[in-house]
Length: 117
Image 1 (cartoon, rainbow, N blue to C red):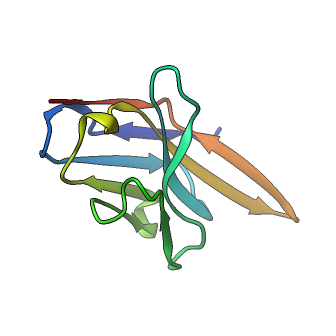
Image 2 (cartoon, rainbow, N blue to C red):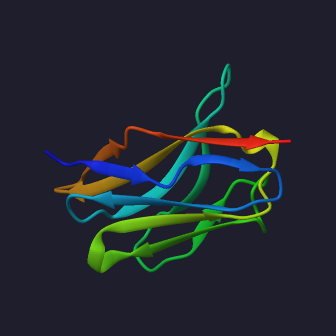
């Protein structure tokens, strides 16, 4: 049973920083972060689709958030700087495995990030 365990969420004032971590119980091909605000659909925040490859970011977080991976530890991080109230959401870790031509998607349980104005 593959598990993704997130940590690092919390309450921060606007302009502050938080760092999210997500540890997978096994190796992943793609790893990234999504978020879901109340009343809104889940959206991509940042993802590294290929190990060691480039990362993609939502336009709303470019220049403020940085995704990084430690493949030896099966861990992905999201450094969030210059946080804004509109960044408030539940953040979900995402991982994907690929085997025998198929893909398998996995999600963490979510961690709440609240940015106060």
